[in-house]
Structures are given as C-alpha cells and as structure tokens.
Amino acid sequence: MKAYLTTDVTGDLKQDITELLVAYQYSNVASHSIQVAEEAERLCIRYGLPKEWGYTAGLLHDISVIIPNEERVALCQSYQMVVCEAEKKIPMILHQRLSKLMAVECFQIENKEITGAIECHTTLRANPTTLDLILFIADKIQWDQADSPPYLAGLLLALETSLESAALYFINWMFAQGVLVKHTWAVEAQLWLEHKFV
Ligand SMILES: [Fe+2]
Ligand SMILES: [Fe+2]
Image (cartoon, rainbow, N blue to C red; front, side):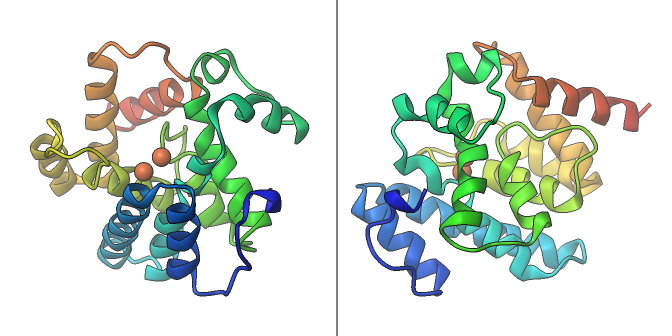
C-alpha cells in the first residue's frame, strides 16, 4: 500500500490526504473528503461520539480512489481478502475496503471504530456501529456530484428520527434506482434496519 504514497506522511492528516489526492489529480475527492469529515464531526457531536473519530474517518474514507480500478481485485486478493461477485463486477465498490487498508498501512490508524466505518461506508453492513451509520450518512449528505442529491430532503427528514432511519431511507432509495448489482452487505444492512423498525 505504501507504494501508492507520493511523499512522506507528516501526521497532519488533512494536509497529507489533500496532497496525495491532488498528486493523483483527485482534488475533487480531497474537497469531498474534507466536507464529509466536517459533516461526520458534526454528527459525532450530535450523537455523543468523539468528534475526531468522524473527522478522521471522513478524511480517509475515499483515499483509495488513487488505486486504479483494474488493480483493485488482485490487490485485495493479495491480502487474502475474499472478493464477492458484486465487487468483481464493479471494482469501485472495493474502494471502501482498500481505503481501510490504506488508513491502517499508510496512515497508521489503529482505532477499529474508525477503520470499520471506512470499510463499510458505501454499503453499510448488518448491525452497524454508530460511527458506521454516521460516516455512511455524512458521505451521502456531502455527496461528490455537482448538484444537490435527489434524496437529500428525505434523508435529512429521516435523520430527524434517527441515524438508522436515515440509513434505511438511503438504502431503499438506492435500491429503488435499480442498481446493477446488490452488494451482500447492503442487502444485509437493509434487512437489519427493517427489522429494527418492526
Ligand atoms: Fe466512497
Ligand atoms: Fe465519499
């Protein structure tokens, strides 16, 4: 993983991730990551978690965008990770798991709350932690497209009820769009969240 770094890591995480992403021509992802970090920080304060957890997870959640799509499956397999059919079909989904690896190996993040939330920020997972939910939702509120997300009003309304309610709102919206493949973790997260509200 360290082979992907362009300069030494200084320990100033915001500066380090910005320099790295800009070096790979991903300044848009750098801006998005800072916005997600600030959103996740706000949600951590609202839900009683250390704000640094949300901020760190937000800065690093998309860091593996610098790894080319065609390298992702083989790279994961070199770490003995089992790659599912959905991930083989759409290697972009693997960026959540590769960002976790980069957080650990390149940025020495050992806090498992943080690395766990990075690992499932695209799909969520069953029985999510509060930080899993916060990063998942912060990423959707601060999405990386130019326009305002079509689901935003509904998501924010659901967030008035709970993090779980907002997460379920988004997963239902995503599946209703007719996604190419349904990742197992997202299906399991949806089931888990639905049962929570029965
Ligand atoms: Fe992402
Ligand atoms: Fe993101």
